[in-house]
Length: 368
Image (cartoon, rainbow, N blue to C red):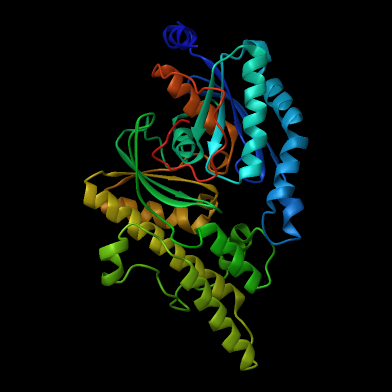
């Protein structure tokens, strides 16, 4: 295997890598050649979970089983390549839902063995950073033409299952966790508050839509872990459980008093509180570490207000902001293929076939 990797890393053409992502409810298969994105096929089971108001692990795993083969076939067709042309396979090894991860890992192992190709099991969170490396005719930086990703960078990853603040010094060898959520992730808080307001699942897009007509300053909801006593111990950590409870109590009081609930104002004020906390802590990390670069990633980055305020506050702080195209912010196989391609280029040995899916894989473990 090591000889194969050396040959790939030193080959005149960049390696063609197929990446598989199944950490939650989206079956993602991406194909890249070096840093060039060729295909990004995604099959979502979100509609199957919506009637339950959240992701059901067993349903997600079954959906991955049903979607895996057609999604691989669609990615190959989009890229205009065959399986035999693929030089390496990459797959999300963790973190994520255990059953969902197992489906992707099993598929990747089967492909690697049948094709005789090296396999790279990588970290889902670091993959979100790898998405920013991708180029191609269909991709454009979301915030200006700012060139290639420069390291080190602070990375804020915000999704339904994760809210993490990282410093990335080297994508394939040096990623440090600065802080993370100690209760609900930001995406979970959006879902729960949406339910309180009678909005559908997933909550993020619906709160974003309703909040457009509201006043973000109408209600001063709490900013978790931002008081001086909290910042001393949890400077880079996040907490959204108290915010969710505060919204619930505010709504309950209005209902009990027989007063109408101003849904747009509540949504806008809640969204503003989340955005404020996320960016305050991320920009504090940039200042503390003297790293004038911030990368955003994860599905919640689709939130219009988060992108707007991030651009304003980063510019005011002299921080260069990077936001991958929205198609690469949500979970996808392209980001996994990108990270795998970087491991190949750096000459890293592939993963052994005896690794297992790790639902709690630390972000410092870039490769299994």
